[in-house]
Length: 167
Image (tube, rainbow, N blue to C red; front, side):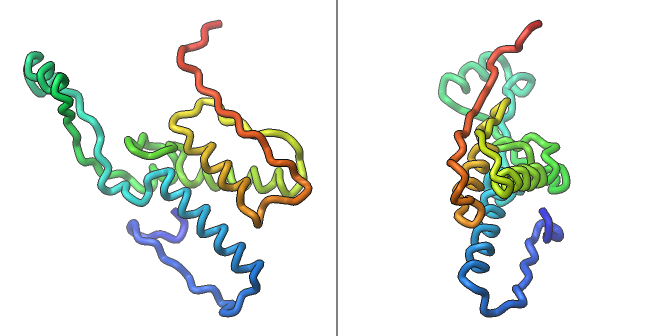
């Protein structure tokens, strides 16, 4: 993510040591949305992610059947590549979204633009995986700094196709 080097966050101290209440709210909202992006993409714990491993090929079919009947799962600790995660180009096993922080930044920009221009309507996420993008959309809409008083609260719609659509 921006401001990071080797997986560590570099925070800058604001020059304005006595910000106005509005400026503090802006900063708090930005920090909250940044933290939410890190949580939804599992950026915070990406270096200790565990992915399920299939039994097939590792043991006999009988042993695999026994393990499944006992609720035993094989997990493999895996590291992640921060560059790929930031672009949404990996498949995080435990994150709530796989679109990555850069695409969440873009989603935030789009919602802020719609609110700033008082464009009425609803928001929709199609192809919901675990709902992380919609969780983030809701957070942006609930930010008091961004919510324009003349805008009606948008309806959030989630769509997921469970079967392949054929033409």
